[in-house]
Length: 110
Length: 119
Image (tube, rainbow over all chains, first blue to last red; front, side):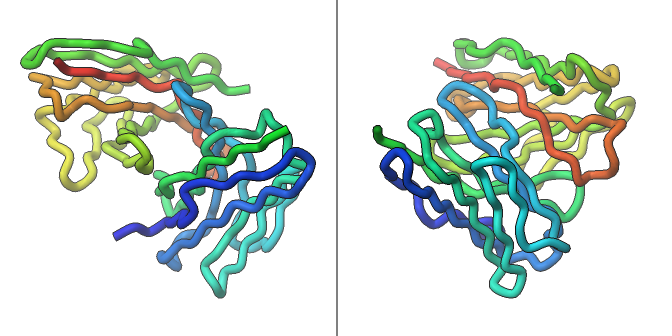
């Protein structure tokens, strides 16, 4: 049973436009959410996080929104750049370890 | 920033042999490290939690006798895949969290992973 779901395996966006990556979770005990970015043959790198007491966190071009009632979070990247092309993993935590979604491959074309 | 070094990055071994993967936190201490496995186009699946000075905690379905974990110091954890078989071929990634940061709500730092191919 997947506790963290990223239903879109891929997303294509033009440079300069907004990228919106979505993530749903089922476990109401999750209280901390993170987004990781992964290039091929490399480990994931931390991008941005949000605590369950907040509904928005912004860091430069990246903003994460959390809707607890819908158990949904999203990552907005604006403006998108070709270097943003990577796999993005949503992760959730209710303890020490993280539970990951399957990832969404973002392709930003110039 | 915090760095986790994982070695080797790629290994090919014959069926029946054992392979050791090392995970080091380079500029921080980690009492706990995590080992993940990723199949193609799949999520990172937590295999086990490695605890410094004590036994690792394995997730359901992960064979502890096959995937031996040793966390000998605050900066080093090793994963040994024993008697490897082709179905063990996968991408293994370790991660760690800085001890000095508050609680579990600090991001994990990941190694670059090890691509294991068993022939």
